[in-house]
Image: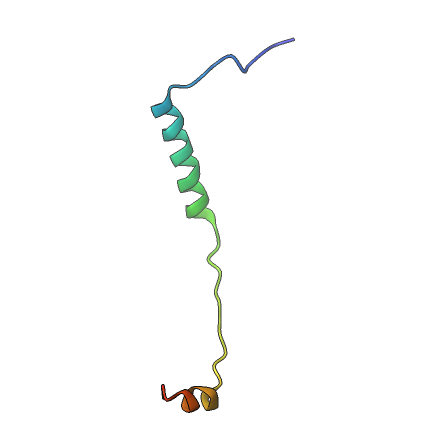
Length: 49
């Protein structure tokens, strides 16, 4: 049996790898497009048109 869990990275090294992982997620995610339908009659009643 081989144990790999004995290595404890230093906090700066851990933070660096976490930040690299987070940057990868942000770089590869697809942006969600949200469209909102606005009823012109409702906006006219509110006085914003």
